Image (cartoon, rainbow, N blue to C red; front, side, top):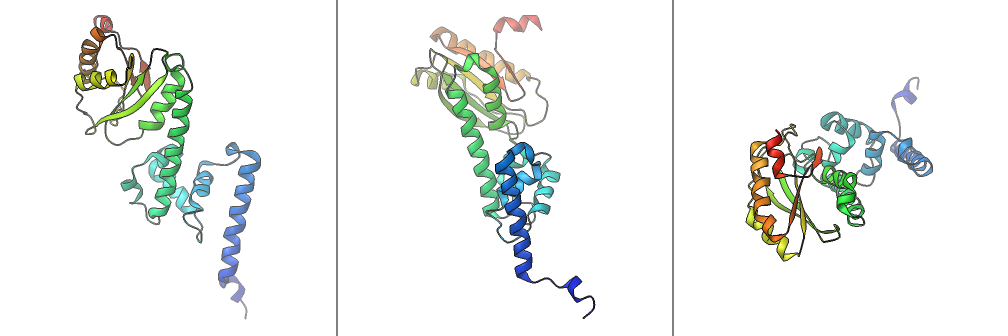
Length: 236
């Protein structure tokens, strides 16, 4: 009948269309790498396994519109992702797997180098691990005499703008690990990377406890890295 072909498509045709698109996208990615595909296409590749029988392009574009960038989609908390219509548990798990894999990759690069001579890798690691967290986190990188990473531990989680930190607990853990230096890592979910008075006081308190025991203290924020020097207080 006239017009029938315009409105009727068999389920088999729909599946073939989606599979054809997925195969072409995979081939383009494998042949030319990630630079050959856009952010929404990268998200499509991640979502394919979790959502096998649906066109995921609209969902990928919605995720970017909601969170702002590929990195922010991957790093978004699971509860926020769960608010997106059409994104189920399996898809959220795929996104979180990618985030965990990226963090491990960067952590491996940090462990393979002398940390204090590879600040760019430390900065990349800080950003990957914490930059998009919705609450303030405080973690510590413990270093040995050769400035290699011994351990990376999250010590506290707080509110958007405050995380309680106990200097003696930090130093106690450093002694347990035989660390000779620590890098204090904290994020600023509020968006202002400027160290607060509380940040400066906290770092100074840890320095005062650590210094007599021969433990050096450095301070790192996902947006910047600096070595804390108590004498710098007088320069401000």
